[in-house]
Image 1 (cartoon, chains in turn red, yellow, brown, blue):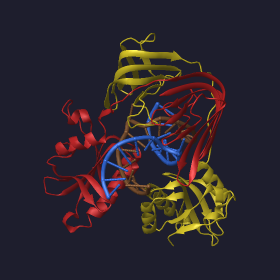
Image 2: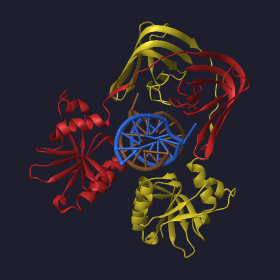
Image 3: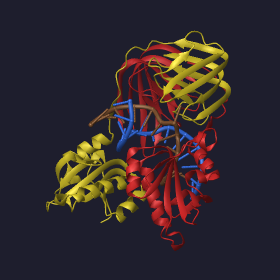
Image 4: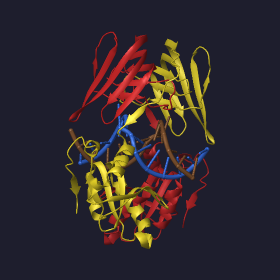
Amino acid sequence: MRLIVARCEVAYTGRLSTRLPEAVRLLMVKEDGTFMVWSDGGGLKVKPLNWMTPPTVVEPDGEPPGRIVVRKRAGRTEDVLEITVHELLSDVTHDMGEALGLEKDGVEAQLQAELADRPEALGDGLRLVRREWATDIGPVDLMCRDEGGGWVAIEVKRVATIDAVEQLVRYLERIRLDPATASCTGVLAAQRFKPQALTLARARRIRCVEVSLEELRGEREPELTLFGA
Amino acid sequence: MRLIVARCEVAYTGRLSTRLPEAVRLLMVKEDGTFMVWSDGGGLKVKPLNWMTPPTVVEPDGEPPGRIVVRKRAGRTEDVLEITVHELLSDVTHDMGEALGLEKDGVEAQLQAELADRPEALGDGLRLVRREWATDIGPVDLMCRDEGGGWVAIEVKRVATIDAVEQLVRYLERIRLDPATASCTGVLAAQRFKPQALTLARARRIRCVEVSLEELRGEREPELTLFGA
DNA sequence: ACTTAGATTTCGCCG
DNA sequence: CGGCGAAGTCTAAGT
């Protein structure tokens, strides 16, 4: 990885056009060809001011002179990042070797897996029939049956937005076309609910259940929050 | 800005839990308190492996010893980034001073502005009534009237997805509740249309019009593409 | 190669 | 401060 600190201006043209006035910035060039421009503040926090993902071509390869140009083919057009260097303050390269990937735990997939193991957390007597139940517009996360044998389609989200409600409604439309599942009801399960989602869900007769990984894993008492009827 | 290169392991607990095995990585600490962990490759390109946005507390402040802990209050819980340093390879700080913001040109706001100036690009005789026409669930981008005086609600997107169609349909539902605009029709304008969006738009009787900034600005001939009827 | 959906999305705007 | 919607979203997975 190469780290260049320089007083410079930056111009980008591609999907849009941007310009950065002269200031001291960090130019970060990763081994894979990723190129990024960072400032110390300026509103953006975790996102670079400008960037280009591989495959990139950087000119020139050697000492940074007055100008660095990064290019990339993007369909029929070309993306160009043009850096005018006014003063070079630092230029170091570090060999960082191989890096193993990031292990994650707690994303939506885990939530779905836990709910598949304990569907009763979403309603008394619920039994799992299938994960990823196919419809012709995509799979519903969980398909269950309740105590009375009724079908229940379940959509799982980390954060439930208005779009999640619409998505489940679309699935239900399709599922109910089949006489065998014509009376299927819908449940939206999420760690967090946006108010608009709750409002729309009520109008669409979707039941909402707030869940948490800790509770599902039995680390906490299940203080189930049910919205709507 | 402080740049630390070190062989280290990283553990994060917060909204989820992650772990990074021992390897050489870049620790980037911005003046505003943003903390990031970078590797040279590893799949992720423009996103850090781990990060924490301000306000953060970093312990300790001085020389990085065997351990660096970054903390942040996040509602009722706490986010923690714990870095075990096995070997310090570099630790430099650069004063980057003030940096002016990024000037952008070509995003959705521009597209909406151009269409507000030339609504006829979306249909013969269209005249703008108001931008950001308010409904009780949010504003429609453009409200127009056609040659016959009929109302036309227009949603502008850079890329039109199925969600954009749903959004416009929700607006139309509300607009049509008012007898004065009960016959309002809908137009979805975008630079690019996803196939699913076109299919759903046809079913929902939303007209789709492909537009481009260049054409709207008169830099190219308007070779209008109309989808559906 | 293209499309779809999730993300510790991030980020800006407006209430 | 919190909700809402755009983003050069980015990224991974499926087709």
